[in-house]
Amino acid sequence: MRILIATPEAVPYVKTGGLGDVAGALVKEFRRRDLDASLILPLYRSIRDKFTPEPAGKSIRLWMGDTAIEGDIWISDRSPVPNAYFIECESLFGREELYGPSEGDYPDNALRFSFFSRAVLEVCLAMDIRPDVIHCNDWQTGMLPLYLGGLYRRSFESTATVYTIHNLGYQGIFAASDLKYTGIGKDYFTPEGIEFYGRMNFMKAGLIYADLLTTVSETYAREILESEFAFGLEGVMRKRKEDLYGILNGIDYGEWDPAGDAALPQKYGPDSLDGRKHCRKALIKEAGISNEKAPIFGVVSRFSEQKGIELMAESVEDLTSMGINVVFLGSGDAYYQNLLTDISARKPGRVFVRTGFEEKLARLIYAGSDFFLMPSRYEPCGLGQLIALKYGAVPVVRRTGGLADTVCDYDHLAARGTGFIFEDYTSSALKGAAKRAACVFVDKRRLARLMREGMSEDFSWEKPADAYLGLYEKAIKRVRDES
Ligand code: ADP
Ligand code: GLC
Image (tube, rainbow, N blue to C red; front, side, top):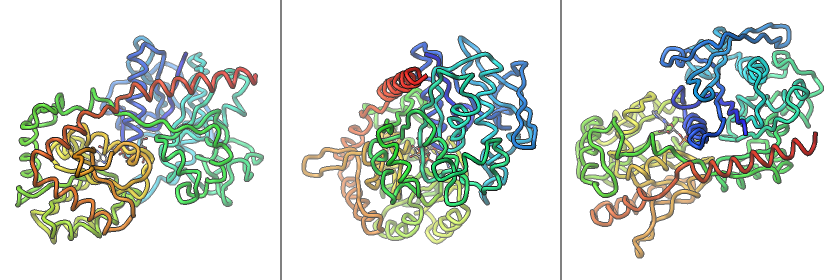
């Protein structure tokens, strides 16, 4: 089976969040099994600066409406098949950011990502490859199934598409006037097509035209059938309910394992928790925490409404009154950055805020915090809590989406569980869970047992990769039966 994963981000090349981890780890797992699987991404400036892909010597040229856009095909790690193809187009992708600066998105994202989606198919033609399945991810690749089923069907008669929703909160919605950049006719701009309240919606294109749909946890797969979670797409989701599958993300333990993490001052595992104390000390120093005997709650997150930043901002001063320290690392919304930074200025030594995207500090927070706070408003899967479990930072989470599917609430009497879960999106519910966590913190034996229980959970990629392969087969069969 020939698999092509079309994605706007993938580790090790580029990552702004969990999608990058997931796409990179999934292809790695397929290649470990000797499958013919490759990634295809835009060649952003950062990839060009940090990696060494090479030009393949082939170009593509596309008319996106009235504009002709040219791109070159680049390849990385050729053996035995390319690990990744890149679409080089300096005018669209040679920029500082992937989607735009913190003030807002790039104004030409409709053009950038409809070009990318279509260019994926052009790359296949130019390189003479016909994937059995193209696995698309999020709104940035939503137009691909539409192009494949329309303009390109004759060249890809037996290629199936699987479309994964990583986050229905980001749909790629653009002005109707941007339709001209996509190169598709007005006949697609209908309520049955990509029209969405008078505008154009790339996520909707993926949801309608892909052969099969997946999302990244079973609970989220159920939640997005409801208006509360579907951001206006609940009707489309319900229509395609039979074709929608929840496949829980894994994490790549080759990348995320405190026993082999070179970024940590000391490596450790479930049987060597003493090593973890060094990491805690290093975090205390880095964050300037003054009362080191008190519990440390770590946060590594995009600063966005989804992640419950507002709720944390509302609760954090009360948490410090309960004797809890909080260490934040995040990037995103400038409003939330300022809100949290102001709080940390009022609570020096207790609340620490670092804004930016810092892999090394993120790892130290997972390794040095006692608890990992993730009170998301909604969470399709969440990788933060999975990494935290592996690193022994006990998750304190809200029961939603993938958080509900991966964390098991602590039962104090039975001394079983892997974290602390609360239900309501309220400050008092968050503080209630934090209080339960703080009670365990004072009993060091209990805490160590709880940490070890989480560290021994298995969220590796094996099971999810099997599930994806099963779905690819199903999608391929469907396309071949229909053609
Ligand atoms: P999402 O994709 O919604 O942002 P996930 O929990 O699925 O959330 O994945 C987030 C990933 O990005 C994790 O690997 C996390 O460690 C990482 N991450 C998030 N924010 C930062 C940051 N500011 N610095 C470094 N890593 C970060
Ligand atoms: C999204 C979601 C997150 C998920 C990630 C990878 O960014 O917000 O919950 O883990 O994608 O699938």
